[in-house]
Structure formats: structure tokens, C-alpha cells
Image (cartoon, one colour):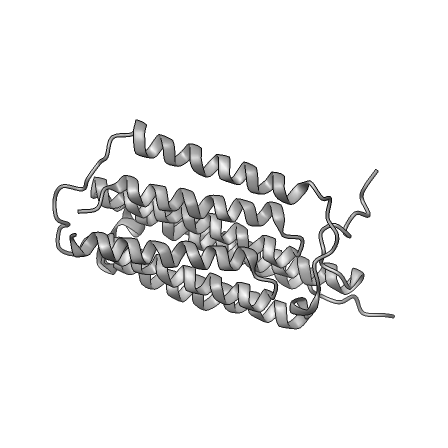
Length: 169
Length: 100
């Protein structure tokens, strides 16, 4: 048993367990914390896959900014105290059944039909480092980068406009 | 070396769990978190293939997906806060004013 496979299985189990914890948790704050754990595990997968910059970006942006924003809004709205309402009785079992069908079908295709592709060579030095990502981003992907900056501006303006309270005259 | 298909299988499992979250949960914030989980699962598949082909484009795309996800979360949560201010409820079953 090679240590890489053991590490992969353990990390994979933690990722799936935290995702299931987020899915089934009754308290919204616990669900957010399970999701933070899931993001941290996925960041470790990125490290193993040679994406050092992306791993740190994942922790800083997803776990650090997006989930903190979620927790702020959950606390602001008191969502952890809102209970589950009554749903149609057949919705939950049908959703679980369809989810299971999707998972089984995808895993069947991956295990039996697709070839098991193994990355053969070791990674080159500096693959996924900030310098190499920076070079790619500013040379080949400059236009999407600039458009993304406009997108962020639009999102900021949108968030401010949506939460602005109309002044009562 | 771990086969890339194992990573894609893990990504598929996480994606299915995220999709189940969108279908089963009734709280708008939890639905939103499940959407983030789905985006993350796709990111994992991208990085796994970037590793296999030894091309950085997969990681660049993950960078852009993260940026778009952050922008989407900002606007989506602003919407949820605005809805909560008027209706004092974020249960998606109760948000049926547009129903014909």
C-alpha cells in the first residue's frame, strides 16, 4: 500500500464526510463550518496535484472570504434558528434516489468505460508556482483577466445597490 | 502516481452531494452553499487534468472560476439580505409571490 493512495483515501473520505455533514446538518452555522473543512481538504488536494498557488488562493478566497461572508449573513439573518418547513413528502426521497443514480452512473463510466490514465512524469520544477501562473495570466490570458476585474467591479456595485435602503422622505 | 480518474470520481461524488443539497434544502443560504460545493468539485477536476496534461491552463481556469464564484456570492448574499428585509423569511418554499 503506497502512502500516496493512503493519503488520497483519507483526504477523500474527509472531503466526502464534510460535504455530507454540510448536506444533512440542521444548524446553518455547522453546515458552513463543514463546508470550510471541505474547502481546506480540497486545498490539500490541489497541493498534491502541483497547484501551490491555487491551493493558497482556495484557502484565502473560498475558506477565508466567501465562507466568512456566508457566516456573517447567517448571523445577520439569524438563519441558524429558522427551522425546516414542510415540504412535499415525495421530494426528498426522489431527490436522494436521483442523486444516487447520478453518482452510480458517473462512477460506472469512470471505473469501467474510461481508461485509467496515470500522470506518468513528475512535474517540472515551478509548475503551479505563482511565477508561472503570473506569466500565463498576464501573457496568454490577459483579456479574461481584465474582464474579470470589470466583473468584480460590477459585483461590488451590485451588492451595494441591492442592500441600499431607500430613504423615507 | 494516483490515476486522474480517481480525482474525477471524487469530483463527481462531491458534485452529486452539492446537487442533492440544492434539491433537498429549503433555506436559501444552504442552497447557495451547495452551489459553491458544486463549483469546487468542478475546480478539482480542472486541477487534476492540468496535472495530467502538465499545462497550466486548468489552474488558470480555476483562478477565474474562484473569482466568478466570489462575485456571485457577494451579489447573491446581497439579494438574500434584501429579500429577508421585506419578507423576514428565507425559506424558498415561502417565496412564491410570483406564482401565477
